[in-house]
Length: 386
Ligand SMILES: [Zn+2]
Image 1 (tube, rainbow, N blue to C red):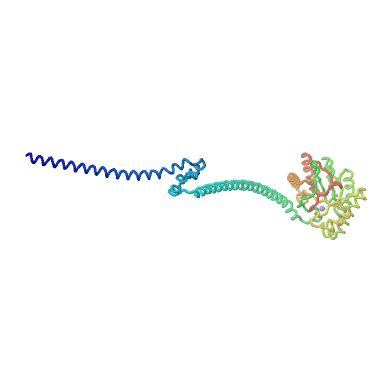
Image 2: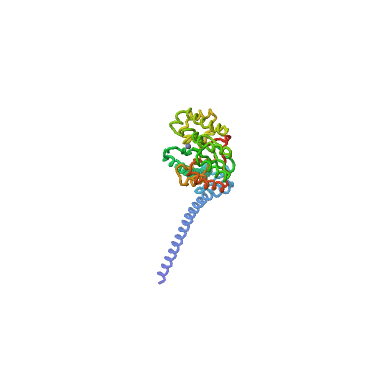
């Protein structure tokens, strides 16, 4: 038993020694391995820590640059003594890059500024466009108003023109051409109307004069020489009662009075002479049969001007030669209300029974509406068709 026990103890001791040696070997090996790892770690740690050191040396401007998006890891040392080429290489940071970045920033800032300027310019342009649009709108409005006005005027002109064209040639033509153009004379202050009677005198002349007197109205008579011969007392009464007398020729026939400038002036002079002889009034006022258009052309006008004749047309046509049932009064009132010209109101009528029959209504209208009814005088600038 003893022998085998010794043997077993010997074996134990040997096993223990072997185990111890093994542990020692492992320990030594572990030490060397550990040391190697530690050294490697130390070297790595050394490399990582280097940039941090550089960061500490940066001035505030550089730190601001660091904030640029995507460039956070790039740090630079302004101090050349701290610059480590190895580190710079490893972090891909070189002085040239910084300059490039700064340039980039500058570029962006410049671009931004330019954009701002462009925006401002655009806004200014937009404002200008808005102003232009406003101006255009005002212009359009003005033009529309003008067109409306013109249309209204044209309507009025057509109204007075149309019936005139239908005018029949009477045995004794009494009508005259309507005014379809703007006269050129300035109106006197206050409400004044100038009533004019053509083609007389007539048997009704004395009644017309009576009515005029009743309404304290003065008028102007453009008379034909043959009729004056028939009613010389009417001509005298006109002058005595403060009315104005003028002439309308002799024949009242287009083929005769407008045959030549000489015949035109001749007829007028013949009638003027009769008034001179009958009333001692030297008149220069004439009215052309059917008005100055289209018959009184430049040679006719020149001839009458040479004789110092004053040619009068009109701007309110009563159409009394046609409207024999009194409608002419409403026509004259309507035109008076619509009258917009600054020229004096010149109303054309005729010495006719149908005119007399409704004359009082017209005189009453003018009196009630504050119009002064005056006779033309030779100092006035005549209303003439253009
Ligand atoms: Zn006439």
